[in-house]
Image (cartoon, rainbow, N blue to C red):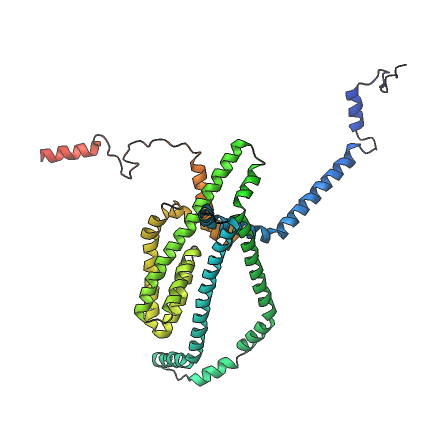
Length: 403
């Protein structure tokens, strides 16, 4: 026998209730909890827990993600050199190792020169400190008609509470400084390791990425990757060329002034001024000014004037010519991208802002349709002359002819 159909309870008039009416009756508050409410509460709590867990994990992994981002752009910068060596028959892993070995030797040599220069200069400044203090004290006495003594100033400085508290705080913060140094070394090692893998396994990484995309998307991804490699490598190489030119120019000045450690200072100025955006030039010029001041205070002024003048020459003449074929980005866009990158990611954003912006600009440029510009004087920066003359001009000309 067929099972009997389930009938709904009748309403007040004795007529069986429709399904819609039954659902509405269940939705009305009758003292019992709706069946869907516990499931909805569990689902909402699960979603909140997943969101909090994802936020916590992202906060914990922010440092690692930034290191991976730096490593990715570093791999893009060295990939052209790795590709050239691989095209000549060198294994890709060996080629990547040789490129990173060259970078390591260059960085180690730079810091060795800088460290030896700073150590010698600090020793010299400590030995000559009484002489500098005598000059300052004599200038103050002659200018303000005072009777200061170098011995009294030294005693007051050595026995001051500020100096003693500073020494105590420095001694207590030795462990913190050591931990920060070790943390910095670990970050450098992490970035180098990821960059090595990204550069050595670049083709395999691209194949793995394209294997999860349809063919139409694969072409766009490979094209974006190629543009990123070209722009990032071009940015690094153009900065290297400008660093070489800047170092040579500052070396000539420092050697002419007779400032000690001119080669090391020139390398410092060239590297710092080019690879630290916006403030790199003035940060790089501070050290040569300080060392030039120990030779002659007027030499520090000459170095400052040269740094400012050379910066203008580089911004308006040298940089547009060198970066026109590599990065091809407007100086205003470059400056804005550096500010935005600094606001978002700090120093990391300032370093990768320009190549990232150049890559995005070149990639989007292929999808923007452009039209021929009309031949209008206003496009060329000139105002178009009005046809005819105004009534006031015509009246003025008529008065002139009558007169």
